[in-house]
Image 1 (cartoon, rainbow, N blue to C red):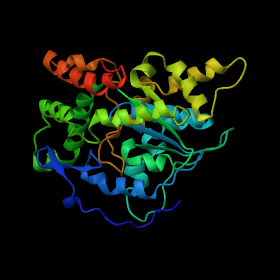
Image 2 (cartoon, rainbow, N blue to C red):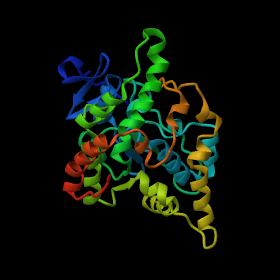
Image 3 (tube, rainbow, N blue to C red):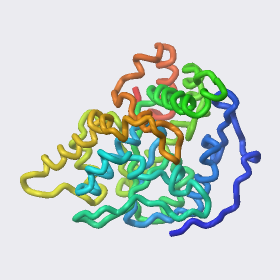
Image 4 (tube, one colour):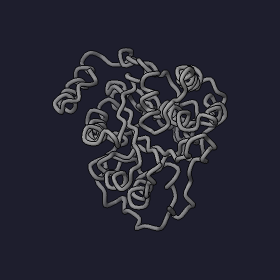
Length: 325
């Protein structure tokens, strides 16, 4: 599989909406993308040919991606899980649109296949909606893991992340003001949000999981947080890397869960660093905030909670996905 040149999308031909100050999101296939990734998303769709042994971690931004990258890497490459102490999970499990296809005609970037007792495989991540990636994912027997998180926390996490990101990149020069929280909430509810609408993004993968449960492992952040050992074992079985042994299975699972816990990961030097990866100018430490459930209660008023809950009933509950409230 090699990158090849493709026709460059003309951004001026795409619908666009402002989401913060003068910055616009561009609509592709009904979803809003940041201008930095429009071309790379197009390259992923047109060029990526997944192998049957590939694992694709899909998610909406800020829904537990970093944690799942750590878990998947540790499950598949158990003998190399200590790499998480010295390398960011985002470097070990590269993003298709942010790293692998970030530039045209560059050599394909993959995570190094570490030596394990099992067959090595490649693990990639993506925030691309299933609706845009369906043909690509369905073209092989690759397995997909999708994680989602309570909708009421999405504008909060993104608000924190964007303000940290823009502080590093622009405020020092342009003296721009922070992204107002009420604007972040409004944009989330209206769907004009990076990779949004959120509800459509989640339901694309949720419907796939109901139609083809052997293809995709769909899990919520809350399920993982409340019972990590059970879900880690299920993940391992789904991926084809089950925990084995008559006596030490629980110890193996416990070791993976502990090494990938928020408390352990967030205290590694690499994840506390103020330095930024070369593929996205945001500090490594911005990928770790709280990792808690229910933090929205500290930010959202009753009126806003009801506004988001009403959307959740309409978009999730009406489709039989009883989640988010």
